Length: 399
Image 1 (tube, rainbow, N blue to C red):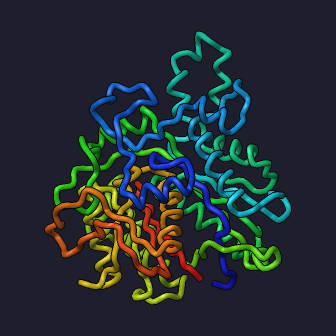
Image 2 (image 1 turned 135 degrees about the horizontal axis):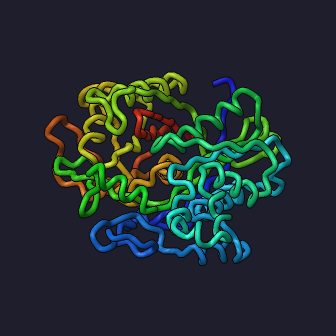
């Protein structure tokens, strides 16, 4: 890459913690956040488990010091919390000092507030103000406004690879000299729409998700937000900033196989990983850990496993684990929170365990890391694969 893309800050809120430190403690101690639904009304409460953040919207509004009379969605509130931590972590006092942008991603957007008031719009016209909060771009604008950002704002929605593509887009904007600094990531809250949709697809488990296990039944949905701050090498040198890690490679591909299923030979995943390695200039042997997409659905884990073997070779796949057994699958936020987890893995020389694993899949000889493991890691490959075949891979490096 002609311009090094430095990561100088990160922020996160998920079912296992309200900030980076709390998330790390949970990952280190094996404390997952999968539980019964309590924070929104659904007929599936008590039967379907999710990675739910046990903080009310009112609590989040108070934490963020927002006016009580607002039409801010839960997706936006979570995004504000994570983005603020990322900016503070990067030591940014004047967000508009350099050419700064925000590339945020979401899939559910303001669906939670639409569901709440949908049947009231006609009888209570005063509630129609909430309609504006429905679209995906609204959350990005709300986050930018909260941060006081006056620069470029864009929204990406490519299902479960959304945040990876936001990170990728931010890197390209810096690499091509368009921006000096970009806040990138994703945010998604739980909603009836997504819960019912995934349930209709019959890919939700009735218990706890078991990534890469032979007897896996499906995923647990989750909610989260995470952002990282990307900065150009020039800004880092000028400000003498501490660098948490570098984004050294990225790749995106689409196998155009099926609306919701991955291809049998993992072609999209294969191409994304291949491209990310090529852009990074790294050899496949340099990858010390893979944070796999690992949704615990029968199709995804099989397809991803085949793709990894195609890239690295039989018996040569690096140590890997899925952190979705901790948080659930957080859709557009997934690649954002897993970017934070990847950086934490390098910072603390630790591979986080693939919880709930018991039996190796019969289709290939791949076993994830199941216990917390100390290991010096210089490069992490992180996969995120979305519906519609949109597959993305990021590579994070120490230097």
